[in-house]
Amino acid sequence: RTFDGNGNVISSKQVENHSAIAAVSLLSPDYVRVRFDFQEISRPYAKLRIGEVLFGIVESFDPNTISETSLEYEIDPIAESLPSRECVVRIDNSDQRFNLINPQGVYAYLQQPQSFHVQMGIGETKAGIDYVSMGEFYFATASAEDSSLTAEITAYDWFYWLEKGTYKNTSSGEWTLGEAVAAILENAEIECEVVMSEEAAETPLLKITDDVTNREALRLAVQAACCTAFFDRSGRLVILDLTQTSPVDELNSDNMTGPPKVTIESAVNTVQLSVHNAAQGTETVYTASHIVRNEMRQVKTVQNNMVHPDMGQTVADWILAWCQGRITYETDERGNPETDLTETVKICDYFGVNRNAIVTKQV
Image (cartoon, rainbow, N blue to C red; front, side):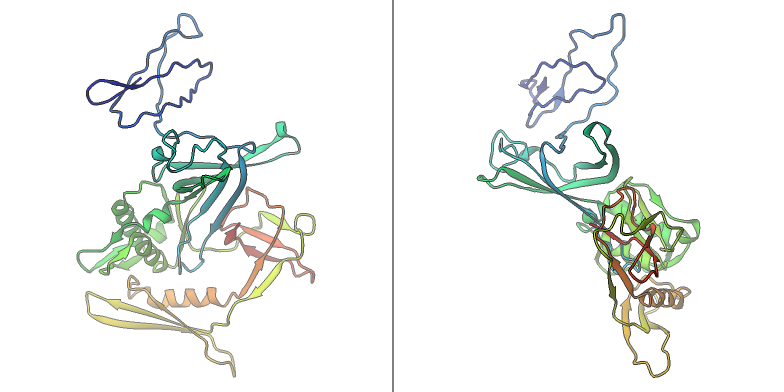
């Protein structure tokens, strides 16, 4: 039973349960207290203990209630952006539970950012499906039309919520990447595990004195340490410098629906990195260049006011090295759901070059 502030019962429900977990659907607006009464238990002479109570909307969607699902993961190797993982699910709404104005619906109880766990399964039979976790997402929006039989739910990872607040240091100075990340997450009121090397965590940075979003502050910080960042499927913030490793999978004619699409990025042979040092009142430009004979100068300009003077040339050289890796593969395959961002795969092509490539986007 649920009660309001005056002790009046708002709603109650009797439930029969035979497992360790019980999901009870009981709409209770503005409750302040919950009471559980157990009439009997299935095991005689046993003590009953409540291990955990989760309040909120608990929904389980499966192939019987899902008409369409799309997942999109992406990582930017040089942290020009911090793309947010996105999950869009179209579900059965024939009972109109997700309609916004339905007084008996659940939309009024949906809160941002409620967690949204996604699993993907592969198997020859329904009983033989092996499920793989695709990560934790957080509810952002839901939409449904009165005449529609489906509703659409959209959820993102924490990068989306980092965009909602601003960050600014009250004074100029220096700090490390580890200190910057901790301060930004604390300002955004996000608690998560951070994974990065000790070397990266000790990278010196300049404090940012501009008004920027938490997401932009984090982007500048990791870029100034020659790193990029993403939230993995366990909800951890991973900060690293992308490098090729041993391939975890091979994409060939057995699992690709067609040859890979290959694109060549615009040529860049010069990077100009501008850094404004608020403490010293100076503007410094670091230039990295690799121009072969008779080649036109193709310049990429970058502004990052968190780059420390000791790291300026290193960051410029790092960005140029990534810009000169110009070949991008786009494949359409029966994907292995366990393959994740930052992992290396071998891509077989018509000419037998069969290069290794880092996974930077999955759709």
